Image (cartoon, rainbow, N blue to C red; front, side, top):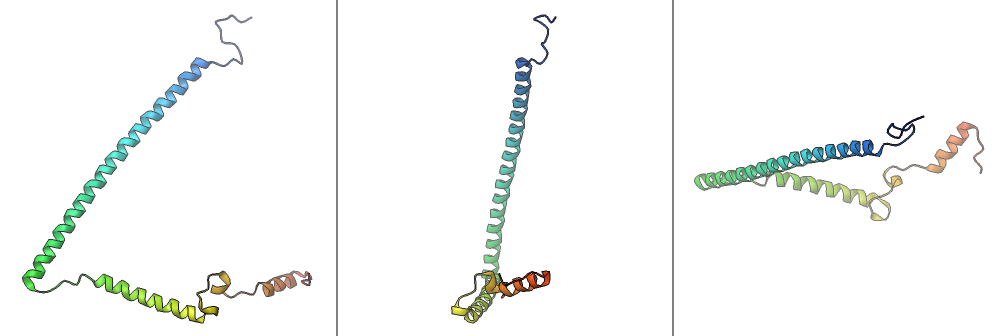
Length: 136
């Protein structure tokens, strides 16, 4: 027979389970604190990088202004803008051409509008290949 002080078989030890749970919670809290510290460090690094980038852009602009003032030659600041403007104009003309070809003057927005595909004919062909009567 078992005494009162001995652990009972199939009994649940609440004190031990509570201690394990507390250790797990403390471990997760420590891990969360470490993650928070890493996040804070990354945020500070990001802010410093942004500050340096802003400083660099300001320096670059002042150098460009000094050069333009000294030489009288304007730097082509809008080369990329012109390139993208040309691309967008070409893309717009292609879309307008596509819209003119589409029935009703609209750009097709369905799968069949982009790739004509006769589903009924394809269904009949597959059923015919499988030897099934397609007159249903």
